[in-house]
Image 1 (tube, protein in one colour):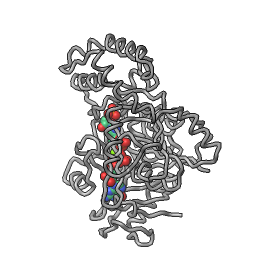
Image 2 (cartoon, rainbow, N blue to C red):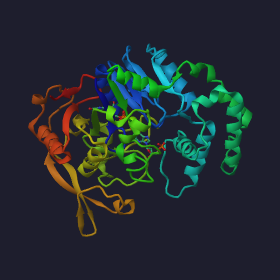
Image 3 (tube, rainbow, N blue to C red):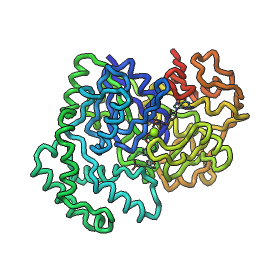
Image 4 (tube, protein in one colour):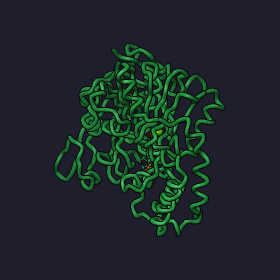
Length: 422
Ligand code: GDP
Ligand code: IMO
Ligand code: MG
């Protein structure tokens, strides 16, 4: 019996979807614990590419059970769009996805509010506009509406009314100003369908733990987008780091046996905020093209840059990462030399730990170590011995500087393009 958590170690899009899909073969249940439809997790199976937003990346294994925990914020319209799209492609999720009754709903007005607030902001976050921030805002303000509120129309209607009243100042500026009745009708139209998916998922997972089942817990976004430990305010509104797995699923910390950190062999970021190793030049464009770095949720071009080991070391510490999965090694194949950031220069100081003061972090300049490239194709290599020596040196360098052990190297987007280490 093993419970493993998969967390992103950078700014999201590290390839968590591919890693979760691979590790699902060793799990009984795959559970998402935070975020919402802001996530875009890509899984490539044979010739088919799936992009999952709310549904756990374990769903493509027909016999496995998936859970969406209380820590996730759920837009019912997106949920059923995703379910229907899977069904159309021959995947049957019926009877094997369970949603927490305590999960908060992303309501139509959350997206309206977010569009308005983003527009108004001086320092734009560049969010996915999926209503995530406003939904978590309501949760924390104790004004949120949860899945279990759907069961009683009177209670649901009263909560919608109260919410619309308190948000009038913002909502009155919107073109799409839905009435209480319209919102109630729209959201309640999913009530009968969603009922079949809902249960006490914390109880279900704790019972599974007692029965010695293997759990795989899927994080969304990445450590540097975490609401507490990320590049605040430029991040998302949930705890993307390992603690989110306990609070977002209702399982105790002792249940976690292993933390797997997923990191790309270079860095990317979509949205605004500090990114010391960003390459705003032809090399950055090269990485974007070769790595196909365009958002899986919003199609926005991702900002690209060199690997930042200060970030990886920090993510290892915050999450207690035991094992590392390094993805997209193949994207670096053609480079003469590869830089890695080993510290930050701030005024006359060299920092080798990630600073908590974000006003200071914005002013940090990267200090680089240059490593030789390997100028050999690594795409689809499945055995470590087949990797060019300089690629192995690059991986060793990452391992030494993060103090976590690499257990998996990804050399392409398909399941088969994977090297497993002992
Ligand atoms: P996630 O949000 O962490 O699941 O990552 P995304 O799915 O948003 O982005 C990762 C992208 O890289 C997807 O398009 C994957 O298909 C792709 N990918 C994953 N691993 C590899 C790899 O090793 N090499 C290459 N070239 N692409 C990869
Ligand atoms: P996955 O799970 C990359 C970014 C947005 C924005 C910030 C806040 O695919 O790795 P939000 O809509 O969450 O309020 O946006 O966070 N962001 C992501 N970036 N991958 C993601 O998810 C992201 N989810 C949110 O671009 O900068
Ligand atoms: Mg993604």
